[in-house]
Image (tube, rainbow, N blue to C red; front, side, top):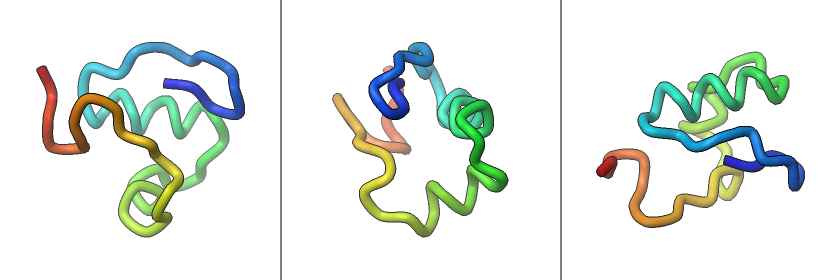
Length: 51
């Protein structure tokens, strides 16, 4: 996962994505994922697809 061009790490679950958003300064990562379209660019799947 990258935020503003900085690599934060690889997310293995939605909880990882939420933690990375929290570390990037999001006060409510769940709200970001639920309401802000285009904030997260999913690659290789989506929020419900994990290998």
